[in-house]
Image (cartoon, rainbow, N blue to C red):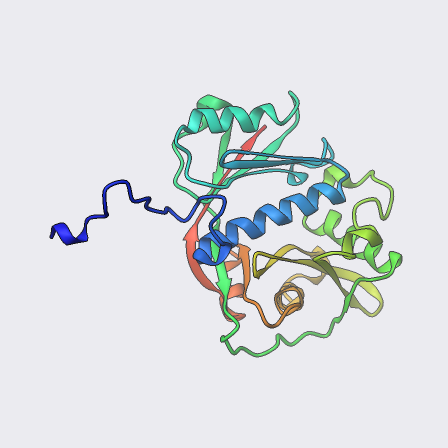
Length: 267
């Protein structure tokens, strides 16, 4: 059995070193892609992005907790030190979300409250599923007006009430979709009722910001907008963080349950 042991001094990779390629594992890809998405969110909110050893934080300001997202990017050697570093990235009184892909201890002594354990889901390109049927007209939002329509649905349908007072087009600006981010909006007889976003990074597509107005729920709008984002780059797989209620919808679109992450919030 000694032949299974490494040579003296041989380095054993964990898969979470900074120089390891994202494709080392699907979870590593998903982490790196979500870090890129957090960076894009922060840029859209004209905020500041910071990263340290094993963590990153996007601070989009006090407009919405959903714009203040921190991610643990490698298994912490010292959780207390990692959480202190993340907390220091946000001013006092600013609500922030902390996402950990790794099992975490109780962070309540550090001022964080547990939100839940959202499932990471993945849709490989080899999956064959039917395009969801919908009566909506689904468009990629390119013009300033289309982006404002998608933004309004996001604020009202997600919802993001803390962003309601921002000027139209302040978040989904035309420059936001000039890079690896795409935004979609669904219209019902010309009225915007659903939206979604797709972000390409680390070789996968991150599906985010799926929002449907109450008047359009239960009619397949969410599935249609999720599908539009999922297939934006058809040559790469897609990942998303689901709710337990949303899992069946995503499974019908070909998504597989991979692992549960953990979400905390600092009130």
